[in-house]
Figure 1 (spheres, helix red, strand yellow):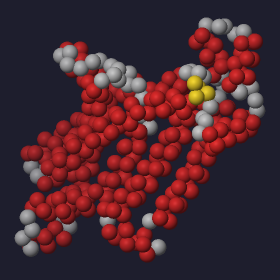
Figure 2 (cartoon, one colour):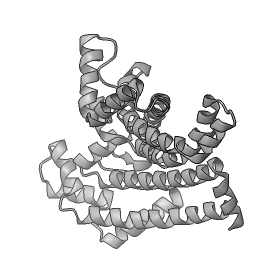
Figure 3 (cartoon, one colour):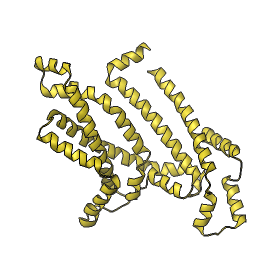
Figure 4 (cartoon, helix red, strand yellow):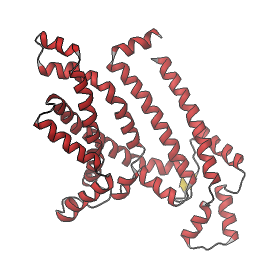
Length: 314
């Protein structure tokens, strides 16, 4: 186990280093200039003196390798990802300010998705090809087919505009998080319901289930102590990737509901050509996905003793 964790941490450093070169190189080659975009937004025209002063301030007038070397030194030695042209403050401060909102939304959406998908997926598998199964499968099919932005607009129209129960947008109170959470969790729940049903139906047809039934083991015991743990292995990877994606920010949902998170910041950075902030966001995403993969591998060993024994033998 410890060797596997060490290898993954080494791979994390290699991946982030390669990602930093790729991202920095691509943003450097883009034809648009963040300084010109900033000046245009300020209404300052194209004064050469102003442009030269801002280029010197943000360091965009230097060669590529000089910029990258200074940037990677700042990241490694001080955790400094540069200065955001859009917000005129360090990138790490911008991300630190927005990250709690994204973590809050990700956690509430993830928990809501689990509370919806697991009971319905188990129910659909247990009552396979019966009325409850048909209803759940139909609802999950409809949910998977709905784009998240469309479902979010429907929630705004019903719950905020017509009924007035919830605020239309923002991130100031607990009421603001309800509609973004529902928008994220409903679509994911429908996908997980179908996946959970499929793996549980497959497990229910295995020979060891017939053996349990022949020994008089109760149905609930079979489902929760045998079928569900064996089915989790096929779902854990999806859960990890979904949670990692939400921690990286869900741009569409955050833009629809004006949720003050990482996704909205990234969208703003792209439109403003704020390359330093884009690079910081990409590095955050790379870190999250590698760490999520590590946690998924660890969870495999906790769920399945066979994998744990295999790691111990290696």
